Length: 371
Image (cartoon, rainbow, N blue to C red; front, side, top):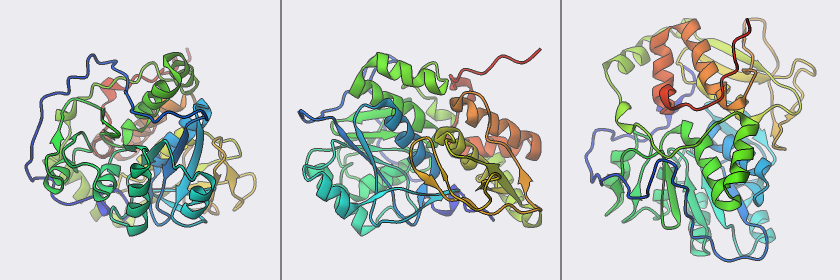
């Protein structure tokens, strides 16, 4: 069985909690308002990782988008030097360890982006995150990164959103927390939370807008092929129903038909498109995506963001699958389409549910069909 979201998600989806009215933050296009501390130098943005397991898209997308946007100094940070195993797929190098970051930036980060992690209560992550918050950092929890932020004691009494599966757990764990429906991302003071994995790109653009203005965010969105990054989200459409349970059980039972999906990469590969493709294929419970370098088998490649991607050797038994061409923002839509064609619509919908992806609200610029 491929490592997928359910292997490391928090239990307790059915528990109740406090639900607030939709946040009075204005229109669908309301930008994030971040209480950033005054600074004469560019903002320092840390994208956090746990070496032993960090969600693929939650990590790669904000890092790549914020780096390209040039709205501050962006660092990938982990407890230890060395590789970071991403989940459910891929492995990268090029992160600073905590000691190195703290030495380079003694005043701390202005923004810390926190992806979902294999373990939400790692002591070193918790302590470092608490120090950054105490020094004035704005903390942005992407998807189940809210569980990590909560373990650092930063969600008590706050309005929050979150991945649909985590929300009741967050409300149970954190006194006074209020879940706000209908929002893809939500700022309450110095803490931002988002819905599922698919919110990683919209919230990254919202951060660019908060730091560099709307025109800067528009230019970055154009580069990835996204028309808009609205805050509205149809959160009531997501949950675990009988159809999802059936698909999960059936796909897991067909272990002898599980496939290895090889995604060819080369230097300069786009982090966003690669993350969406690898993440989606690896959540089907029918396949596990890996990265291969056809030009130099086994040799790592340098992604567009500057991170180094570790690859594996190709195998004859694997299924080749291209990282979708065209606008990177459309790579998730395209990958889900390919999954549906290979494994059926039930599996496509199951993957979309895990990622909290709503195709009707996907505003990527789909290329016109070739006549």
